[in-house]
Amino acid sequence: MRELTKFRRSSLGVLGAATLTLTLAGCGSSTSAVAHNVTLVFATQGLGTEAQATNAAVAAFEKIHPHIHVQIETLSASSNNAYQSLVTDLASGSATPDVITSDVIWPATFAAAKWIMPLNQFHPKLSAFFPGMVKAGVYHNELYAMPWFINVEGLYYRTDLVKTPPTTFAQLISDAKSAMSKNPKLMGLAFEGNKYEGAVTVFQDVSGGFGGAFLNAQGKPVINSPQNIEALTWLDNALKTGLTPQAATTWEEGNVQQAFLSGDAVFATNWPYLYPLAEQTGSAVKGKVGFVPPPVQNGTPTASLGGDSLVINKNTKYPQQAWELVQYLTSASTMMHRALISGDPPARTDAYTASLLKTAPWFKQEEAVYKYATPRPVTPLYPQISAKIQEALSAVYSGQTTPTKALDQAQQAIQAILNNNGN
Image 1 (cartoon, rainbow, N blue to C red):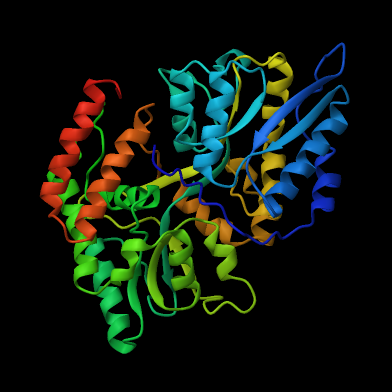
Image 2 (image 1 turned 180 degrees about the horizontal axis):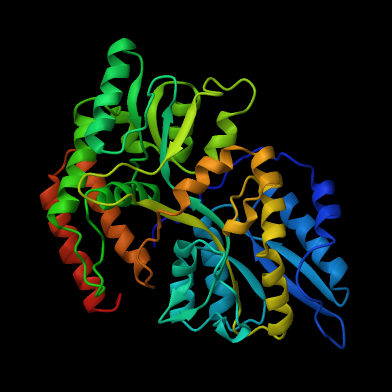
């Protein structure tokens, strides 16, 4: 399968982990009625400040649930490796890990294989969560994943160079060219163009803005629609005309981050983690950053959804205790404090308190983009679908073929995948 990108960040924390532990100890879910001590294994990714936030939240959970011990199993920072490790455990029928951090594109695959537990039985309250995150965890009308933190891909822009953020792709080009004419060293748009999942999310952002989609409402592929051809042509033209440097055909998130934070790009596609980095002391763009939904051209704003959810192993010996942990970690208070430590944006609206926004004001702009969060197709076959889209994008960006021919080939390949159920 293709490389799964988690868009991990080396973000700055704005509170200390010790403060988080003390604060979280007084909040959370109701105490479990357990007769004996149990140990839950929580498999999760995250290093640095993310690990600090997780450790502190788990310690606070254990304090109010003295009969439940949580053993943290740290997965590989590589999403592809983490995914393969989880598949090995779950396919074997192992009872652990009990609770798992899941990329938003994994639940459908896990649910289709009957590896994770449907959560409707616990009667979760979902009204406060961003709808796109909830949708990513639903498979065959059953909820399998609780949103933990959200990521959406949006458009960064230089507020000192662009006074009003563009709402159309034509305006983006015009604004970029205007800034470049005044400073020829600037690049107009930095985007992720390497042959990997990040290129697919950029394409989805632009596709939706032109009115396109990958699959229609009936689950049929529409990858070679006129709207998608127009969207891919727009991205390809950005490379051909010099709006975007040719080097972007090998760029991933880190490359785009470097281009924007160095002050070399007027616009950039990237994820929320970039904002606090841009506001650090010493940043070339400190105080000059805006973050908005991707533009449109006869479509609707489309911000590709990333982020993490929490799922429960179907074979866990402790389903109720596992749910207590999931409930606690996805509470508003826990999410808010995680955001202050790690920069992970909360997946629920009621976590965006005045306290959070005062300490981390960039979350206000980010929150405005979350309502346009658009999941990639929620299907266990998505990894194979994505691989074919990646091939099409790479072929076009490298000049091997045209957008029309590439998407026609992708359409045929994806239709075959769906017809054969991935076999």
